[in-house]
Length: 240
Picture 1 (cartoon, rainbow, N blue to C red):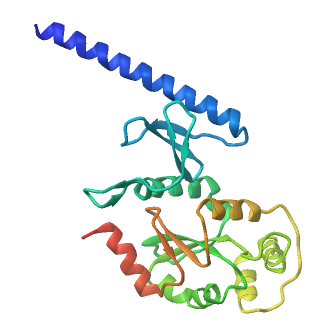
Picture 2 (picture 1 turned 90 degrees about the vertical axis):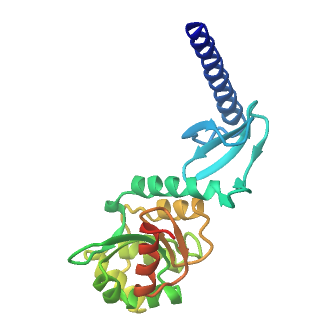
Picture 3 (picture 1 turned 60 degrees about the vertical axis):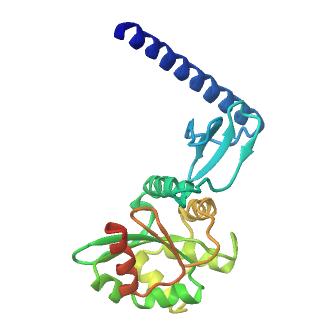
């Protein structure tokens, strides 16, 4: 009797997997046809029956099993009062930042690093300048700061040109510090990742700068003093 039940269970599992694979294929085909430029990273069933979770870069969409309907928004577990989408976005943000790579960032590192944050910055942003002027305080707290450029004025503007010049400088860290003090730096051009930074910022829905992202993928919009940032990062390790 048990053997019959096991065979039946395996048959049902096989049917479920087959259906899931067919749904995934339908979703990929539908999205590729309607949005050929979109690169789908993964498709898998969401917590809601008949709705699939589609990861595209740092974004998450929800698509019907036939691929005809797409939802963009947050999936919330009402009973648990938990934003399920945000929890998963943390993971996609981490992967997206890793994909950019430290070699394509400007990094300020303390002697002993306890924490690492990635910050979208604009050279001409007032609070970005305030944060940078307190760099010694962040380093004293053991915080490594990885900068990505997000000139809010857009491409081919003065802020964008400054970002390119900083990246192309012989000493990027010194050039960034000088630029944030409103000191004139030599205008330079070279191969640079600024456009890639800006695209990632758009994917992360950056509304303002600075925008701080922790190693866990959590977002802290705006300026945070060093001690307050450490408290936030520590709370991630020991959530209450």
